[in-house]
Length: 335
Figure: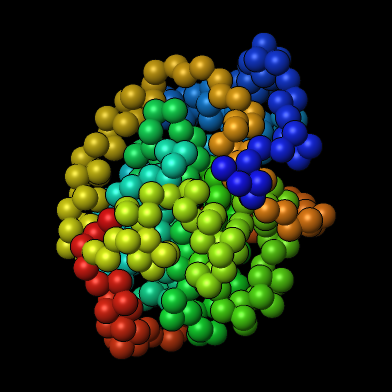
């Protein structure tokens, strides 16, 4: 493992508390939450509470506030009840899908292709993102808490940029799924993306910023990072791997429909108590230490967007040519 992703003793992520102290804080959060509905109680496993505490640097009051807001959102939005048929239209071009492989740390991989946008509806796009997050979580290995985002910028141009969707995406990721992202790889972002990144970066908390990695196919160091993180025979050729099979919506739909059938049993399984997870695992350290943006920016509660995704639908229609072109780009078998 190279220095780019190995654990550093001085990166500020050392365990802040003993296991006993962590459990005590988890119990404090539970006490502050008070009585919960059956569904909320299932959601609030020790592992889940620990993620919220980690996201708020183990500040009990802040973590409790964040968790209460998520429970309210989940009760209203019902993300675990979204099914494939409701979001299949958003998925047609393969703009987001769960790969059939994990990285070398065992993390679930979500592939994203922003150039494959086929909808102008912020509400629809965010609902599909939520579905993908829930699906990725339900398919995590038993000892895993985090996932990897692989973002392919092939074909990306200025028409695909939406600050609103990006802001809503950041809000959902950080406030509704804290500590679920282990690493986001931006693969071959174009030069004009840099000023856009400058604009959206303040929407991200420093912890999230430090999980974003710019990777370029013509850079040897970038290639080494991909080889260290993935089995190159399973990785798509779009990311420098050896798998040319691509994305096929029909086969992917079959996978998602099968996953939907398992969702009720997943929530039944969540009833089982789990031991608390470490606040910062070696896995998290490896991901967060893979690079450093050296940003001091943060956002306050007032600066964050509203709790539920926007209902905005832009008046522009998406050209059928955009969908066709994108389907050609990612044609093949689903991953």
